[in-house]
Structures are given as C-alpha cells and as structure tokens.
Length: 307
Image 1 (cartoon, rainbow, N blue to C red):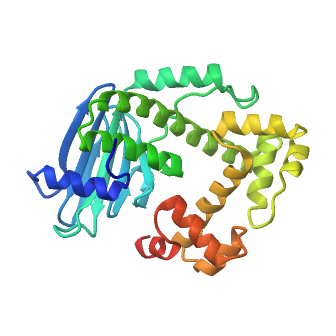
Image 2 (tube, rainbow, N blue to C red):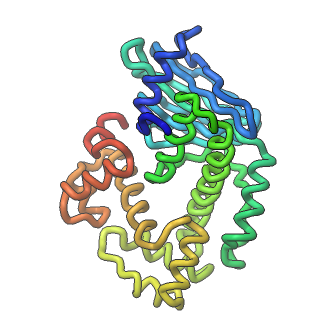
Image 3 (tube, rainbow, N blue to C red):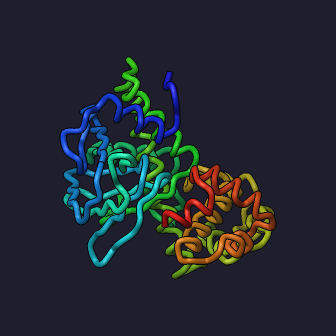
C-alpha cells in the first residue's frame, strides 16, 4: 500500500531518492507502459522553458507554481490540484517564478497513447452514451485543456504516483487501470466544457443543456433538484442518470464543483474571498473555506496568494 497519499509528500520522497542531474526540469522516468510516467523537478527560477508533446501529455502539479504559455496569447498560472492536457504535436513554454533549491517546483506527466484514448472513448460510447442531440464522446483536439481536480481525480493521481515512488509490485497494473480512469475523467471534463459552451450559445439545444444553463445562472442561489427535473422534463432518476453519464457525478456534486470552479476564477480575478463566498451560493465563509480546501488542498486565502 502507498505510505502517504499527499502529492507534496510523494514529491519530497521522490526527490530524496532521485539526485538531480540538472537544476531546470530535471526529469525522472518511472515507467514506460501504455503510458509513460515522469516527474520533473526544477530547483531555480527560469523562464520560457519549452515542453513538447509527442502524444497526449497530461501534466499535474505536485508542488510549487508554474506559468504556462501557449498559442494565441494563452498564459495562465498552474498550481497543485490542477492539471493541463497538451495535444499531440503541440508545445507550451513554462516560467518557474518561485523555484529554488529550498522550494523546488515538481510536476508529473503522463504521456498517453492515442490508442488508449480511442479505447476509452469507445467504452464511454458503449456504456455511458450521451444524449443523441449532443453527440458521441470523441477526443477534443484543443491545444491546451485546463482541469481543476475533484477529490477523486487528486486521489487517483496520488495512487498512481505513490505506487511508483514506493516501488509497489503491482505498479504497472495501477498505472494501466489508473490511466484509463484518468482518460475517462478527462473526456468528461472536455464534455463539460462543450456543454457549458452550448449553454451559453443555445441553452434550448437539449434538455440537459437547458439544465446546465439554469445552474450557471443560479450558482449564487439555492438550487432544487426537483426544479431541475422539471426544467429537463425528466424524473429525478432519469436526471441523475444523465448527469452520471455525462459528468461522472450526480447533479448536487456537479453544482458543488461548478461553484468552487467559479470561486477560483473570481479569486484569480481579484474578488475578495468574502464576496466570492456569497457570489457562489455559500452563506457561511467558514463552510466555504472548508469546502474549498477539501476540493483544492489549500484555503481560498492561500489560493489567492499563489494566483
């Protein structure tokens, strides 16, 4: 079993056993299977360090902060409890503003084959088909996909990395099964972005899109599941099934995730934590801080300081 689940603790254990060969983006490859797991450590500040993706590259922060620069002027900070997915043949340039020998920046990458993407996509279409008017699951060709982790995604990454840092006998199986689950979560996150865009552009496109549009407009208010079922003209059980298929969670968990995702954006754009709390539907700042910490592994105040 993994000794510790925290990615920060795993990064520290990894660095104790992997002496650096270079100070910037020192790479340790732990496995080459259907996916290649690597950990990159950086021990000094640097700017515009290029990272190329031969296959789909899933990048997850372990410790510290980066700033990612992509095409078309894309620039965004990259913190723990967040991931980026880089499309095959694309690249990003990375700044390490805070890295030092005392506080290194660590990031994991998983290089995922396109065959794995197609296999998982086919399984989703067979077992968790989306409504016909929305279309089948398929890989998104976006240059860069930014993901905020749910607890389940964070624990999954901890399990994968921990199995290799701790040299477990079943680490190849953990990686294989874990990558399939991670890809499924990635597809659902892409699908969420697609549905949110539909909700902005054409909220009446489908019953589910109409529900998503209503949720987006009412995040600061109490949202009733029976009301969502009426908007969708579905039973509660049918509504739950649609959410499970499209998002991998029920309506209330989805609403909770969207509130916290919106909170991140508001804090990142300079809104106070207290005002953010009320703007995303929480009446108690202490409760808001607890849920934020549970979701992202840091308090809203810590998130504001790092953003």
